[in-house]
Every structure is written in structure tokens, then in C-alpha cells.
Length: 246
Image 1 (cartoon, rainbow, N blue to C red):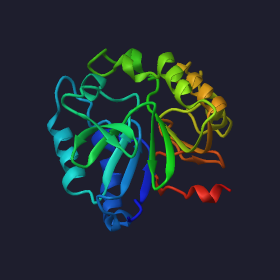
Image 2: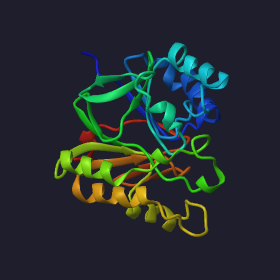
Image 3: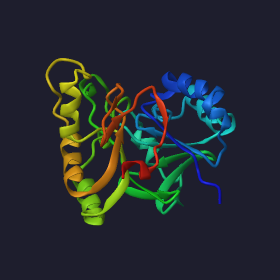
Image 4: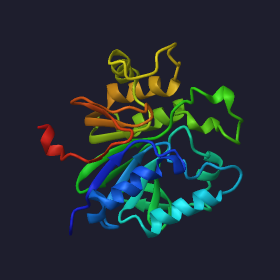
């Protein structure tokens, strides 16, 4: 069986980020097929409008289904409409490479929090979610949803299932506090008071109790790469082979 090519990128934010995908489809992405995957690391944003789908969302989801050469996978961020996204009657659950996903359309799928997947014998752990620094300026269940935050119960469930296990890659939207500290040290984040993000603190428990070769996230609107941790925003990269970390 032909191996799936796997690419990663950061936040899409709905139509705002579609240009990078359209450009990718004209360049490196044109050589991909629907057997290959582009993973968006949160803030997918094409299921955001409340209470129902907007024409822009419908158009761009159709583009991903009909015109993008690849299959799109995404984890949830903090800018998603969870009242719609978590409706598994509209977006039914399926099994995908050993874990649960929800189907958005024939080539767009939501990778669920706390699920693990084995693709090309590469083991992934996925934990979407983050806290919104601007939630005080948003409207509950219209432009902000409390389900965005990674809950204490979700972390407990992940640790119950996977504590002391080792993965090739962990994919999240936000990052553990110690990694966010690195971004502040490198002056990659906005100056000012640090936002008290409980999701970041909870991910620190994952970092301390579950093994991995590299951790990838979005959320921070910057590009950063270190041996164990990488943040993606506009860049689209091919997933490195786990063998390169030996």
C-alpha cells in the first residue's frame, strides 16, 4: 500500500487563511492526492458562523472537498463553533487509522481531542483546544464557546489512557506552559501581561507524563522550531520522518 504523504500547517481562521492553501495547491500540493493529508493545527474556522453555515463557509468547504488535491484533517482550536462542530448527527463519527474522527464532508475531517491515530505506522496523539485571550470581547455561543478550553476531565482521560506511553508526534492547538515560556524568551509573542491559560497548564501535565519525539502546535501566530517543539502559522511543512529523531 502506498504511504500517505502528510503535511502540517497552523491556523486557518476560516476564509482568512484560504489563500495559503490555494497557493499550496498550485505548487507543492498539486502533486498530492486524496490519499494524502494536510493537517491544520487548530482554528480551522470554517465551522464558525452562528447559528448556521454561512455562504463563505459552504464555498470554502466545497473547495477543500472538490478542488484541493489532498484530504484535509484538522484539530479544533479556540475559534470554532463547538455547538455546530460537536453535533455528531450532522458530522457523524467514524473510525480513522485507529481513532475516532467526525466527517465534515468527503475529504474534510475533524480529529477529536484525546484520540490517537496510526498513519504510516507513525503514532499521533491529538489534543485540540485553547483559551481565547479576547473572549471578554466576544459573545457566548455567537462568537465564543466555553467548550474551547481543554478541560481537567479531558486531561485526566488522556492520562488514564496513555500515561507513560510514547508517541511519535503530539499535535495540539495551544502548547504546554514551559514551551510557551520559550516563545516569550524569543520575543515571538505580543508584549504585555501574560494570559493565564488553563489549557496550557493542563497540557504541561501531558508533556511530563507522555513520551513523544516532537510536539507540533498552532495558535501563537508565529513560526518557531526547536528539536522537540515546533509552532506553525503560515508555513506548510511535510511531516518529518520519526527516524530522523534517532
